[in-house]
Length: 127
Image (cartoon, rainbow, N blue to C red):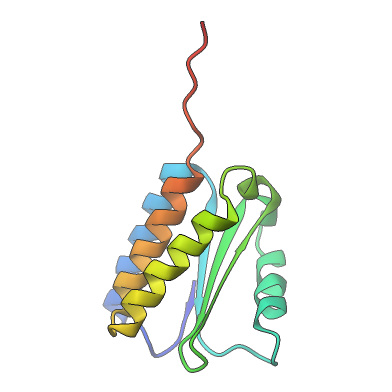
């Protein structure tokens, strides 16, 4: 997790806890970047960050550039089998709502929790 001035040290610790819980929930890895994005294409930049992760196929990257008011969520191939674009959009809407109210930490926590819950593999019963 990289974080800009938008998060305090206490916020970062709380966010780390949220990430650990999310990873336990769905067994995918989460990374968060809060800070400035280089260049004009925020999606491409987020994708480059995501591709540098240890296991991109099993990872979710949440990127927030508060100055530009941009949120990007990049999911790996394995994650996309469990997490739809519509579910990602719902999490982004939740984050946007909290960010607009000035709640950066709460927005990230709720968004990450939603992504993890939706990405959780469904339990199936076999006869």
